[in-house]
Structures are given as structure tokens and as C-alpha cells.
Length: 187
Image 1: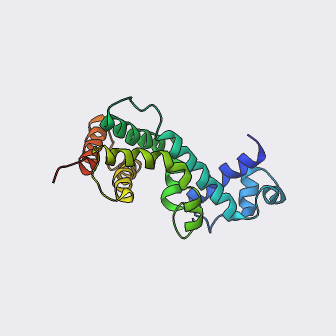
Image 2: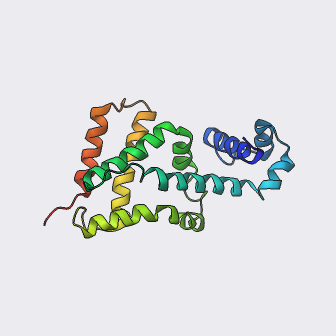
């Protein structure tokens, strides 16, 4: 791992554990085993490191969600995306906690959030195609994304807080309830 990566990982670990404002650059340097000047060689300030972490996680989301989608069954594709994100969060608890507690306003500005939307364009296109094919409800795109991915966040939270073990049945139940909330229904 090079110095820049070490700085990023150390900042991720510390801000998740302590919060952004309770994490001084001197501590990041000490924990990363680099000089404070080395941090400023790569980054202008703490916010720039936080923004880079946010961008890296957004990139991951864009790739992970669309991985290994089945060919022709839209519902199965949605379930796979849901499960991909759940497994990503469970396998990367620091990323989950970062997005929960750090990757939100006012820490992450609207400008930075909008700059990273490009990583979600394939997901947006997938959902829009589902609306056009009458696989998904014809409602606001943001609402469908929130209903879908918000449920993943809620289920991951239940697991991390040990409120539910999230066994296979519970995961299938959560996916089914999510699907039922977004699937196309004739009115």
C-alpha cells in the first residue's frame, strides 16, 4: 500500500470511529506512519481526503450494484442489485458507516454529491428502463432509488446493530418487501 492509500484508509478508519471534527491531521499522520507534510503533499486539507473517500465508495457502488446480473429477468436483476449492495455493506462495514455518518450533508456538499452522480448513471438507466417496460412503478426516479437502496441500508443497520441476524429467510423477506414496493401495479 502506498502512502496516499495509507492516508486515505487511516482517515476512513478514524473518521468512522471518532467523527470528522475529532480527527486531527496530526493523528492521521501518526496512525498512517507518515509525516504531516506528506499528507499535504497529496491533499490540500482534510475535506479533500473525505471527498476522495466519498468518491471511491460511490465508484464502488456503481460497479458492485451492476455485477453478475442475470440476463432476462428484471425482478431477479433487481434482487441481485439489492443483494450486491447488502453484501458490499456487510463486507465493507467502514464504507457503510462512512456513508451513514460522514457521507452526508453538511460534510459532503451538494456539489461533491452531484459530481459523483456519474457513477450511478448505469443504475439510473436500469431503473428508467424498468419504468418504460412497466416492470417498475411510474414514479419519480429518486423515490424508487430511495425505496430500494434505503431498504438495503435499513437491513444492514439491523445486522450491524445485532437487532436481527439477517439470515437467508430475513434477507429474502426484505428483498420481497422491497420489490413489492417498487414493482409495476396497474391502477
